[in-house]
Length: 244
Image (tube, rainbow, N blue to C red):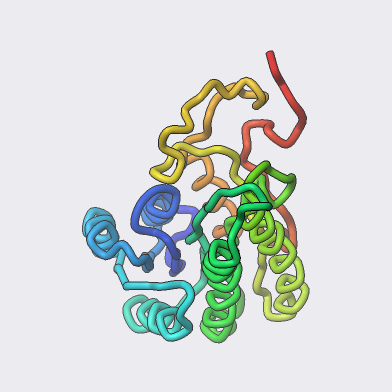
C-alpha cells in the first residue's frame, strides 16, 4: 500500500521542477493528482507520463475562476480533494532602491495572493472529505533575509504566517496546514546557481525529490498531528554558516 493511497491532490505549478517531482512521488505512492500550471505543454506531458491517475488543468494562480475549475476537476475526475500543494511561485531580483512597484505587485500577486486563493477555493472540498492537508511551499527566505530579494523574502515570510493563521481557523475541520521551506534546490528556476555551496552544512544543492519526500509526509496520515508548523529542507543552510 502506498502512503497516500486513495487520496486526491491538487498541485499548483506542477508542470515541471519541484511541482512535477511532487506529483510524480504522490502518484507513485497511490494518490490521484491534478496538476495545475500555466505551462500547458509541459503540464500535459507530465500528466501523460504519470498515467491514468493524473490530470492537467490550466491554472493561473492569480485567478479565482481557474482555482475553482481546478478543484472542480479534482472532484469530478477523482471524487474529491484531500491534499492541496501550493507550489507555484516566482522570484525577481533587485536592490531595494531599484526594486519597482511593478516587480513588487507581480510577486505578491503570484506568491501570496495565489496561495490565498488556492486555500479559499479548496476549503469546501476539503471539508467534504472530512479533513485533509494544505501544504504551502515557502522557502528558507521565509526564515531569513536575502540580499536583493525584497519581494521574494516578504512573500515567503507571508506564506509562513498565513499558514499558521489558517491552521488555527481550519483545525476544527480536521484540515492541517503547514509550510515547507526548501533551500537551494536543483530545478529549472535555479539553473546557473551551481556554485560551491560551502555555506551549507551538507555542501551541496538539494534535489527536488528530497523536498517531495517532505511533501509526501505532510500529505500522508503520518503527519496527522502536525499543523501550523514549518518543515525545513535546506541541507543545514539556516543552521548557520558552514564555510569550510
